[in-house]
Length: 258
Image 1 (cartoon, rainbow, N blue to C red):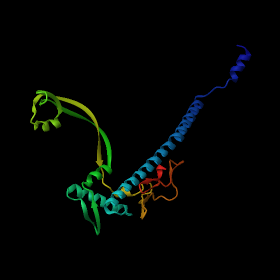
Image 2 (cartoon, rainbow, N blue to C red; image 1 turned 90 degrees about the horizontal axis):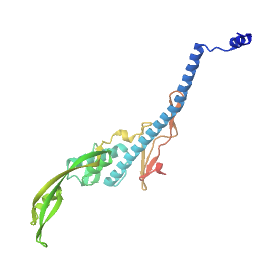
Image 3 (cartoon, rainbow, N blue to C red; image 1 turned 90 degrees about the vertical axis):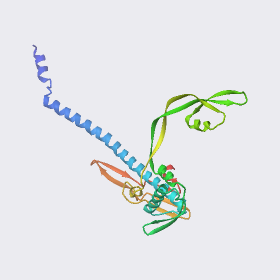
Image 4 (spheres, one colour; image 1 turned 30 degrees about the horizontal axis):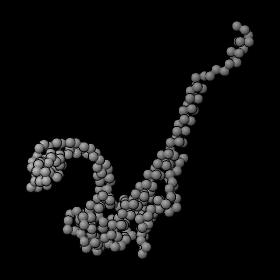
């Protein structure tokens, strides 16, 4: 072996296993930091959007309450709890008594309210204050093949009618009889509603747990988020959850639609 080659071998750096492990740990740590920096802000942004959407949903609920209250009392109610209690009590009364409509006097604790109740108000309540969901149902249709006398042609006509119309056709003097019955299935997507009761939760901001501010005058009403200034909360040591006023609704017009 030449002296030049031996010298080259002696000067070639050798990477020790401990150094390789250290470099691997550093690379892994940097990857974790990178994932942390990218992932955590997106999680916080999602939380901000969720809280904002929930707050605006609650304002929309209070907006519907104000409209129903005004429809019955011809006035607006600045106390959200009172407004919700009145609307909920009318809902329960109309569901329990079909004759509970028109001019009524509602007593809640020490207060009395003169109201004009729509007929079957509970039906409006249960579709407005409810979680809607869609469900596919299998329906079975029954079709009757029947005969009916034709006076113009002096012969029997053959008709196909659904079960819902067949009973009415039986009372017709020209009705003959059933020739056959067919059953068929079909899939229909229906919308269902799961009502919920109006509780104090819907009268408060989900961010600061304070009541929404409701004002009214001769021009109408206004529902406003109680947050003043900017809300900030430290998250995961290095990041900040922040939000500002989530908006308002004035006479059924939403600020976030502008």
